[in-house]
Image 1: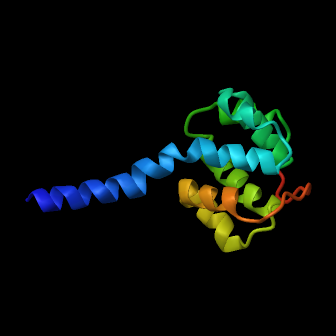
Image 2: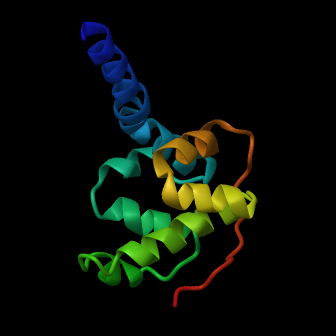
Length: 123
């Protein structure tokens, strides 16, 4: 029984806790690759405004993103666009939408470069 608990604890730590702990590092690298000040990730609302700047969306979208449950779809589109401004494949962009912590780690530490191009406009 102790072995089973140890194995389950390892998988929870490896697949859940460690990626969540590495999210600030990932965002730091993504902001740095986008020529934005990396420390802005620690300012609660402004980090989303900077993310909107990275994907070339209007800053007024922050008002929609503050509405609970409505913000889910725009955030998926923002993450999709985040993959596109780094010239990643469609599959990677969908992975960035649905498995965000893992694909954000990949995006942060790979050799892709930021391209200052607008891909999908807001609704």
